[in-house]
Image 1 (cartoon, rainbow, N blue to C red):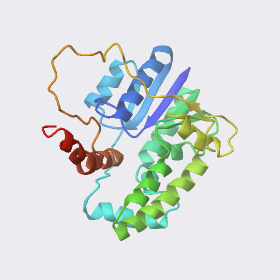
Image 2: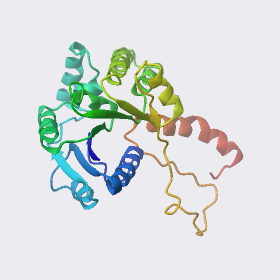
Image 3: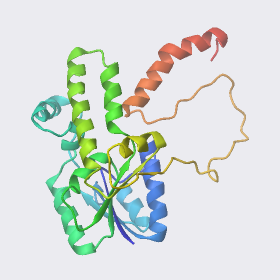
Image 4: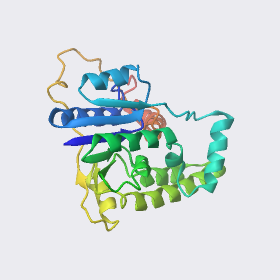
Length: 258
C-alpha cells in the first residue's frame, strides 16, 4: 500500500508525547508499506535525514513563521476574528504545502492520506480521488473548553471562548470530509462516533516499549519527584503548576524533605 502522511513537522527528535507516538507508528507502517511524509521542515535538517534513514520518503515544505509573540502574532489573532475557522487551522495553512500535496497526489498514486493532526484535514477537504484518515491525538474542542473554563483574564477568556466554538464547529465538519479516523482513547472515539459518520473510528492507544524501558538496578534518592512532559503544551504546564502550588505543600507536611 502507498501511504502519504501529512503533518505539521517531521516528529524528531523524540522529545514529546506526540512525536513519540507519531514516529513509532510511522516506523511500523514503513516496515510493511511504501510511506511518504509531507511536513514543514528544512531539507537538510536532522529530522528529515532521520526519517529518510528509516526508508520513509520525506518531502519538507518551507516552515511557517508562527511565533507566539510580537505584533505580527497579535495581528494574526485579530485577523482570525473574521475567519470561520479557528486559529489552530488558519495558522497552519500554507499555499506551498497545498501545492506540494497536489503534486504528490498527481504523481505518486497514493492509496490513502493520513492527516496526522485534526487541523490538517483542511488540506484534504476537496480531495475525492484518494481516501483519507484523520489521526485525532486529542479532541481539540475539549482542550479549548478547558482553557475557557480556567482562564481568569476576561479579555483572554472572551477570545478563547470564540476559539472554542470555532474549534468545535471545525471538528463537527472535518470528520465528515474523510473516510476514517483514529482516536487515542475510547472516550475520544465516542465524541467522533456521535457525529453520525458513515464509519466507526478506531482506537489506537498509546503504548510503552517494554524492551527498551526496563527497571533500573541503580540506587534511587528517596523523596525525589520528577515530572516528565513537554512544557510547551498548556495542559502539562497547568498540571505542573497545580501540583507545585496545591499538592506539593500537602506532601511537605508529611515528608518535609520531599
